[in-house]
Image 1 (tube, one colour):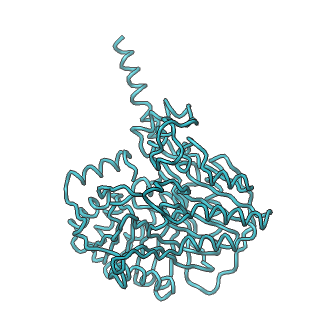
Image 2 (cartoon, one colour; image 1 turned 90 degrees about the vertical axis):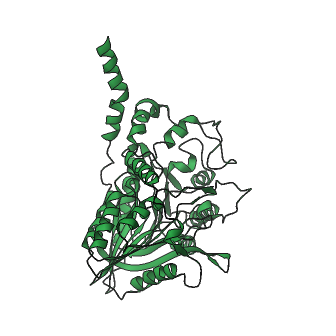
Image 3 (cartoon, rainbow, N blue to C red; image 1 turned 135 degrees about the vertical axis):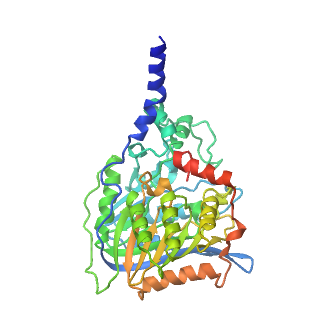
Length: 468
């Protein structure tokens, strides 16, 4: 009898975790393309800052998205993480980006009924199946295909929970007729217990891609009302890289149950430019980050602007680079604001405080947020002979760059005197030096050297029991 109890305990307690640990992503994720010439490349940024104690919203990315949609003739594909207008409208007011993009897509479809429009998104917008998001429903009603990413296909980042979810709960779906107040916003549709259980897997299609037959925008920005004032970065580009982006997005659609038609891409021959780019997704982003950081030598510079940084491998690589004499400057979000809620600085304050303690040559400043977020995800390498840029959706955390979330970034090689190099250098210089505005504050303002806080974040990240 006692042996049977032990066997049953093993089956119920251990096997689900082992099942979760054995999960793998669908084939063709963690993709790294070949470097190809970029016909067009343009750096775009959104910056919210203070000037004379007044908030300034210098926003450009969303309008660029609308312009790209307007210019499309044959094909539009969007893969966007957050796409909803759910927030406490009694306390806050944000630009209606979701409705504006919805109407732009519908207008394009009515103007050109033959155009193929596909919108891929994350199930968080419908709280994991608890209800139908009204804008996505409106797109469907107007002939625009929507694809909700099947997160069950992704590798589990939270095995201490996800194993039990897979074993005991996933079979029941998310249910409808919610009865629990929506944690995103009180006036949003109610949710179900089953949808909350699905949320706790902490999975996401976190990509932020806009692709047409002519060009693409790879971004850190969500077309999402409560995110409208965040500071973000994006790269508008064209050329052979469109093929890489399309192949990657077709893969996501396929394992989510949707087969996409093969559109005809209008790829112009690249001019005589030395700027090249490639798509990198999921764990390939980590590989690229580490390769470039490890390649940096004395005299090289690394400039980073990041919303979340906590991955131990990246932090360790930066530490070693600093010891080799590489100049490193980091602008980071202080992790204190989240859609009207106050946060305790996890993980950035703990991770970067430890990094600074180990390497006093690394320079760190915090973005001066006031309710919004410094949501950028980019790093710029100034090497002796060329510059490199990595930019996109991925934060530098275990979940984002070690093969759990779906992420899309672009890696660019560009000459030191290129317009792209000049634009990014000017962007970073402006923020670092508070040129014509209050962008950043001293590192000491949010420094946190508390060892308990540090080890709490490390345990959260290692186990996956966290949302970052």
